[in-house]
Length: 245
Length: 224
Ligand SMILES: Nc1ncnc2c1ncn2[C@@H]1O[C@H](COP(=O)(O)OP(=O)(O)OP(=O)(O)O)[C@@H](O)[C@H]1O
Ligand SMILES: [Mg+2]
Image (cartoon, rainbow over all chains, first blue to last red; front, side, top):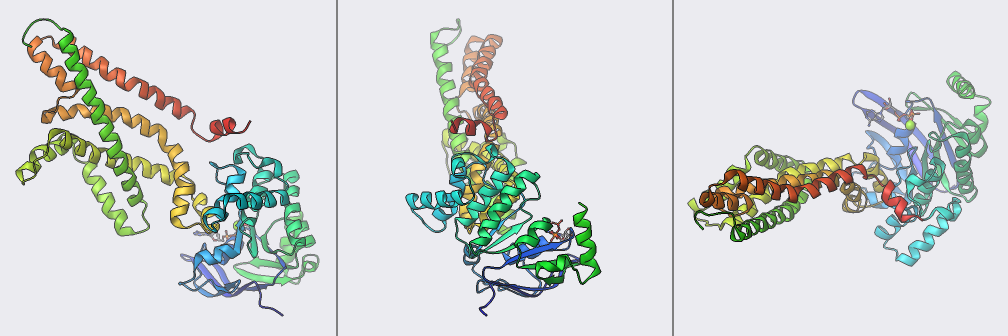
């Protein structure tokens, strides 16, 4: 088997006295979709942020596409070229149109020419079904459209792995569907992904592995089937409470 | 020009003074704008020493009356061997003064851009400079525009202090004419009106900007 795209090994992370990651380990291989589930405060977002080095870890090891993320001398630019991340709050740049949002990094970071960047942007916009919104400003879009634009912006950098942090949590059910379809297409296209989600049905349907986090650890992990047949009372309780939501 | 009534010559003299008020204001705004930009950048520097040092300078300038800065530049510097003409002394003093105040306003505007914007740009592999210039500053400019334009009014009025070092701008021109005409009420009403005429359009503009910030307006114009 090839090396995993993302590997966490015994990762520890505290905020002050609060231990948020308490020895987290998991591997995500190429083309895999890992669903990170767990209660609020269990450390899911923190784990994701550590993978993109938005937070520094206290001890342990993280490798992402061959980069040693814990290395203080890590070239952050190289890491971020390989990792795309999308947050719950879209964070599109409000002063730029959708098209300009998408073209900014390919042009500034990768030095693409204008024509090339336009082609690239049109490509990713078509992928997320927003071809007709290229010239709109973020605030003119619905939440679902903004989130798809944010995904397109990330995809335009051609990352090797995509991280999603509750990207549908701020959306109405109808809008959630359109964003999940985009993620489903990405999965079908072979994109390696780690997604934090509360959409249990979607996780079960799309994930190749489910990682249940509890108290800063991966409490239970396995194929989506573990959600219907949990081995630990904690996961059973969590799945039960999610179904009741 | 001793005695007599207000005549065309006096008005021309006032107009000349008003012209210098505008020149001083422009110098203060341009010089101060550049200084303020540098101050704002230093105040948000990733280097602590730069932040602290620039913060100290700002505190020092903000705690000193403009009049004292003017005296220092015009009377103080020659005393230690640097002679400075009034225009330069006034221009430099105003630049320092405006730089300190406007710099803090602009720093506030930069900090008012939500932190996730920095992070989103960082996740796209943009360098710190690219993040600042392509993502943060364009948004900060929108936030800073109304208070900056409002501050312009403050600058125009502050230039009257340059009269204290003998620079003949509008206020000083009025004083000189009054010395010969001895019609203080009439003359200072005229002076006040000219200041008002200079400032009013700007405060109107500032208020209009305040109502129309945000990206909505420009966006609606940009997308048919
Ligand atoms: N920058 C920070 N400083 C201090 N504490 C933090 C910080 N970020 C997160 N925490 C704390 O760490 C814990 C884990 O947070 P995290 O955001 O990783 O949880 P989560 O599993 O993503 O929860 P949710 O489902 O609510 O998003 C929480 O108690 C949170 O308050
Ligand atoms: Mg979270």
